[in-house]
Length: 124
Image (cartoon, rainbow, N blue to C red; front, top):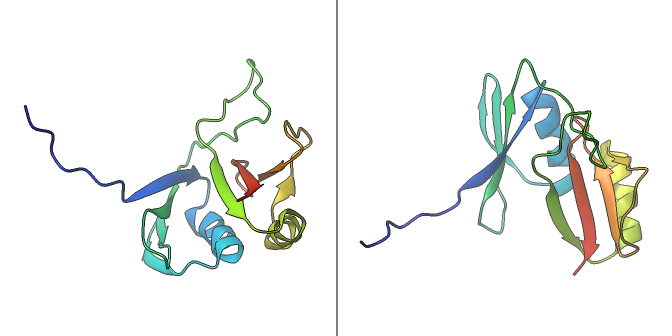
């Protein structure tokens, strides 16, 4: 049976406030807003490829990093390539991220966005 053509158009992050989380990632990535609806925002990469969307989830629970079997588990994290880890880290903090207490690798920095989703900055 032939496979249908499928293209990943984006990743959706739930949060208690889609607009707030989208504003954070717009500051972090510099991507434009391409969709703005009640409870839904989308940013699109200027380089093409998958976008990043945000959905308001009224019963959202923050994930825990690192994982804890008694708390909400992380379901997804974003990996973001950077050319200067220290500069990108300062930029992430200025945009509103928090440096995670637990750092598993010396050449990767784990940050938390305002909704608690972990994201990793790493050198390319």
